[in-house]
Length: 390
Image (cartoon, rainbow, N blue to C red; front, side):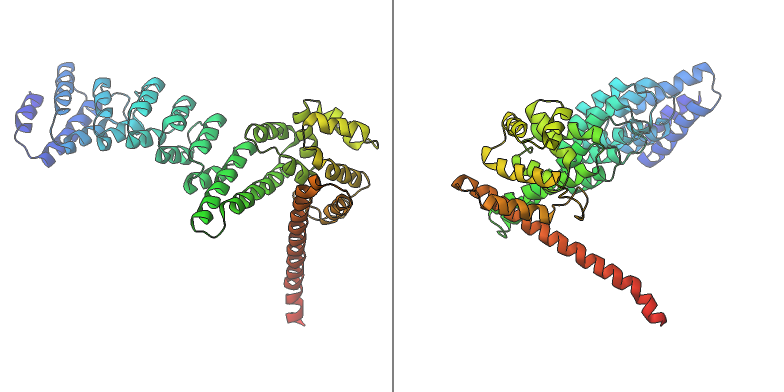
């Protein structure tokens, strides 16, 4: 009887009053001890309210039913297909949706629906994967910021591939401690591409130089990142570099001249398709016959062999001892030795190698100067309180 009076009244009541009454009806359905006939009548009334012309009424219905497991499924599904501001509460909170429902909603819904689903507590991996694959940048950002979502590593990689050029997503990804080294490199590469495009558009640098600077920055970041990567994760990183075309002779030489022997040996092992233990034997053996064969099997440019040979010989003689910067920075004395030996070689084919080595030498000298100045500044800061006390 009460529901019948409600239906008579709702036909002429203002939208705001209808919304208030709709919210009260939905709460009564969920939490009051209604008789079966009254429950059926209330459900029928809510079904009718799905056609109410005012979005205020339908939003009130969505807000009241969104989080309840006792809400009528047919009404919840209908609300999820309504306007974005009406669908958002149920897509965010309703426990009635199975994973397949949510995946379908991600595929067919708009940006608001995807963002609402991405914010769901305990979002399962399958739905997160759907958002990573077809979701908007906004929904992917919401997903990454959802600490309760289950996100598979491949979904994180996919978001990085699609939206790593966007600062908000890139910074959010880099702040996570569960992303692979290869994903971090993908983000660094996208940042470098963005910066190269920016300075080219501004005409601060010509395109070729901007791309070279970006490439060298990526190589430097790769060696730095690899230095902090566990040995067991270096080979997947190498495979990513190879697949993306970044595993160049210049990068491998940079790794060796930085003292990152693990990255150097793993790269050769990957390119030569040999066990890394065997590669390590060739590298550390005093003879160079096996090293030349290894170098040729890896397919590295023959013109770069003199630099690798000299660097390996210097390494065998303890060339990294006393050099600052760990395995992440170019070693100045090592580079100068290799450069001096290579300058004695005759042949125009060595010109690109010498140019690369000179750039390495300049970078190493500047980095060494920065380290020296930082140490001087730290010493001055530490001694300042003592001077003041005196």
